[in-house]
Amino acid sequence: MPSPIVILTGASRGLGLAVLQLLLKHNARVTALSRSLPDDLRALQSQYADQLLIVQGDVSKPEDNVSAVKQTVHKWGGIDSLILNAGSIEPGKSTARLDQSVVTYPLPSSLVTVRR
Image 1: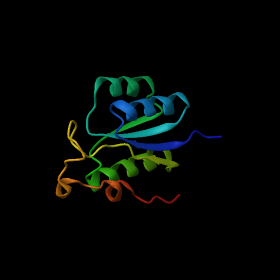
Image 2 (image 1 turned 30 degrees about the vertical axis):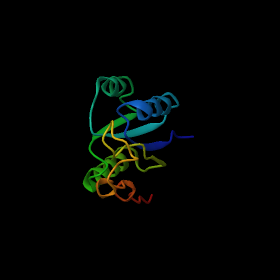
Image 3 (image 1 turned 135 degrees about the vertical axis):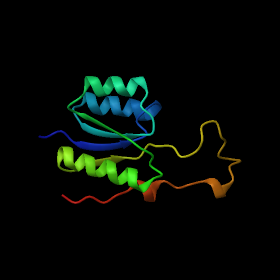
């Protein structure tokens, strides 16, 4: 059975990085869409060069999402799973007091339909 092909957003640290590590250990092929490229993510790229494709981008920008999908399909021929982990609220801000006019809902810009 071929290894699954996954796009994971927000993979540079925290929960996203932990999920990425688990996926790679279980032989998944992963495209990580991340705004930043910290040392931990770069180390995984070196260790899992055949399994990990890193696309630097922002999920709030539709063109970055399209790029991640296109690069994934080009490299591995399709997509089996999508894990939407990227945050869209500035770190340290309280959601309870957040002005609703500044809240962006990333789901529409994160989902792209792909057909095999």
